[in-house]
Amino acid sequence: MPFVHRVRPRYAEVDAQGVVFNAHWLTYFDEACTRWFDAMGFAPAEAFFRDFDVMLVKAVLEWQGPAGFDDVVDIAVECPRVGTKSFDVRYTATVGGRGACVGTITYVSVQPGTHDSTAIPTTLRRALETDAGVSGPPGAPSPPAR
Amino acid sequence: MPFVHRVRPRYAEVDAQGVVFNAHWLTYFDEACTRWFDAMGFAPAEAFFRDFDVMLVKAVLEWQGPAGFDDVVDIAVECPRVGTKSFDVRYTATVGGRGACVGTITYVSVQPGTHDSTAIPTTLRRALETDAGVSGPPGAPSPPAR
Amino acid sequence: MPFVHRVRPRYAEVDAQGVVFNAHWLTYFDEACTRWFDAMGFAPAEAFFRDFDVMLVKAVLEWQGPAGFDDVVDIAVECPRVGTKSFDVRYTATVGGRGACVGTITYVSVQPGTHDSTAIPTTLRRALETDAGVSGPPGAPSPPAR
Amino acid sequence: MPFVHRVRPRYAEVDAQGVVFNAHWLTYFDEACTRWFDAMGFAPAEAFFRDFDVMLVKAVLEWQGPAGFDDVVDIAVECPRVGTKSFDVRYTATVGGRGACVGTITYVSVQPGTHDSTAIPTTLRRALETDAGVSGPPGAPSPPAR
Image 1 (cartoon, rainbow over the protein chains, first blue to last red):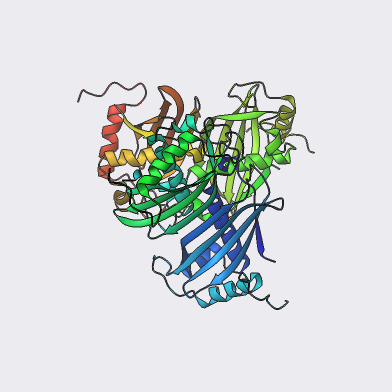
Image 2: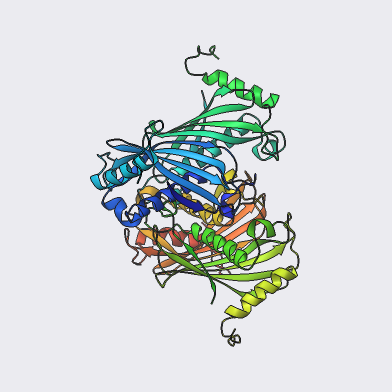
């Protein structure tokens, strides 16, 4: 079961078309990432900046349907890939079971306080791999039951 | 020469890492799109909603380097593809000639006031194709000199 | 006991000084208002626009201290004044019991779908007055125990 | 003549009522402040954080009318008060000469990199007082001709 973060779009985030403005999905996914790290045991305001930090290098967003003001938006978070210095996180947002937006974001590990890439620290790697194992890469054999 | 829109990142848009927060790039690209439509002769607040409207179906963002508070960010706007109901716009953002962020966004034409896709109206198609001809699809022969 | 809404500032909302950027407090208070209306029985996405709507005419914000990324921010919501066409809501935000920001916002009732002011509808008035009675104006006698 | 900063509200900043969402006015005023400091000779990205810094302690906003997507919003910036450690800036936003929003913001001077208040540095004070002299406090005698 992937980690799921729930968001209720704010009135401020809905545009004149009555739907969440596109950019806010990246903010929702960032918030989901914060809560996911928290759930994995990394206190967001402490672990980041001190133990490790990340920057985005790529984001792919695909919209399947709208989300409106105060809708119940559930964002499932999975880690399909962990590399040496970078990893991918996939965010799958649904509204009442209907697809809304899927984002895949590639993060690169950087030295805290800098923009210099660095190997993903071991504690972070272990957590991501555990999660990657749970969610599994596309086409990969199922992970052993747990 | 592609259309270029200039943005100076607001203090509010720069995060604790001292760089523009990722989601704001989509907002910058949206603002660049507004000014580009304006330059093509479509008054943004009038043409949209009445003559045509668009929704995003896909966005691919790649970051090459940071942009900071009040940097001079130039965003070149090009239309590499025009389909029947959808088209792509590529946004190439640079800071002092250095790459910052490239976004390719796929828009689908919708009936104003609805979320229903529809063929791109002729006036819009003509404008996009003119621009598409200027910038040219990847691998396409160069447009004639102008 | 006033209604309390909890907010965890997003990374995107914290600026280069490491604190929540000032404008976001208005967004937090708006979100708190949404949940407060919800708690009073007005489903936000339905009641607004159909039964009544409001626009802001005045906001007074005072900051006592900072809030940072992922802090636990509690926003108490009270209605100290209900007039004929307008009412005030006071938002008192604290971080771990320490004052962060107090906002008093004056809303005017408008005809849904317009910007025309109108008398506060009875159902809304009743809810606000009940809350106004609970929280009470400064210096007013305590409401009877309930 | 006060300094005037022009803003064109972004599509992202207009809500389902078709008007600029309230919180964005604080962001517009912040951007106007950046450009005003720039015009006074303080390069925003350098002077702040190094020579001086400020934090908001109070903001009073009053709305007179709406601003919509892509409207031409002119924000006049004036400094009606300069104290020892704090100063006020008044932002008067109009759309085609019609009032939209007036904000008065009180800033306190802080030691760069800290939240500790400090006397307004001399160079900043001199610039603010010159501007304060131009705009003049309410009811004050006119400044001498310049």
